[in-house]
Each structure stands twice: as C-alpha cells, then as structure tokens.
Image (cartoon, rainbow, N blue to C red; front, side):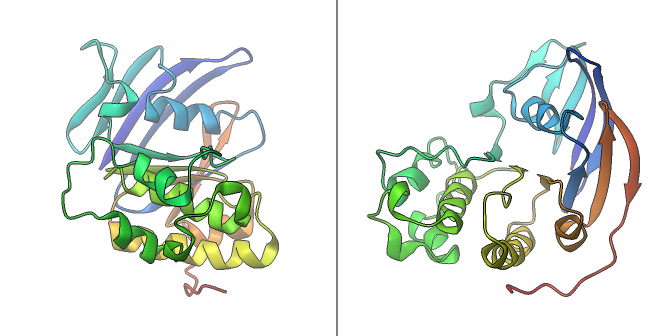
Length: 222
C-alpha cells in the first residue's frame, strides 16, 4: 500500500495531490505540464516535495514533519523512464544486472527475469542492437531486479510502434499480477489507460481532476 499526500511548488502551479494505491495498476492521465512526471519523481526521491508525506508499506519515504527524505537507493522504488535510460556501453544483461545492486531477495535471479521478459537470448547485445520493445523490456528487467515495492512507469509505451505497443501492454498487465506490487503508469493514451488501469486518475495543473475505473478488458498480448 502506498499513501501520498504532498505539495510541490512548480513554476506555473503547485502539485497538490493526495492518493492511495494498493497492489494495482494506477494510470495517471493529464495534459503535458500537468505534474505527472513530477509526481513520479517525488515518489522515487529524484525531487523533494515542499511538505507532506509518502508512506510505502508502512515505511516513511518522505515526511516534512518528521524530517525524513530517503535517497532513491533506499526507497525500493523501481522507475522505468520514458527514454528507458539504458547504458549504451553495457549489454542487455549488464543493464538488467545493474538493478540488482542492493537487491535483498536472494531468490530473484537475473536469468529468471530475462526469460520472463523474453530477452534472455539478447543478453550479450547492446541497446543500439535491439528494438524499441526489447529496450523497454530491458529497462523493465533492470527495475524489477531491484526488488521494488513500487514500480513507476513514465509513458513506457510511447516510443513503440502500434503492433509492439499492443503486445507489450499485455505483458505489463501480466507482470503486475505476477509481482503483486503497485504500478503507477503515466500515459496520454486513453485506450492504453482503459486496458492497463485498475483505476485512472486525471491531473490538471497539479490537482486531481477526477477518478475512474476503466471497463474491464480481457488481457492479451496482441
């Protein structure tokens, strides 16, 4: 369970958000500049809210009153960036293994995750030698191998072609069910939100403008 109640000052407005997320996929919608990425960065520890509190499974990640602000490496929060942020000089295997630094779950093996994400056969290749969908899976592997209690995904499918996007979104839904941790996914795509989201929240100028529960869809890879 994640609970968030924070205020973060931005140049044009204040991000003021109060949400709670269970073991589900929460999709965050909203126009560009609404504060979606800022929310993810506050959760990950890359930005610091002005005040408020972030609590994940009973652990305080940030509290302005208790003066707690855990660095990203101690939060157990995985983050898949929009551009995937892979190291170009590292192989798929090395990029994925980078997430294992600080992994406390001994049973979580690199090979298992690579096979689960269907990239084990690409282990010795470099990011420039694989497709967009394969780079996305590599970034997911790196995030999951950090043994996170929360996974953040910033428009993870936006750079993929239509066919690959439809395949990967089914894989994301299956991954969440397997990992059983909260996923927070930012997107502009209404169809993507309806397919992936257990719940959808819309942000406008840093405020929650509405909540919704998408119509249930059959999960498929295609």
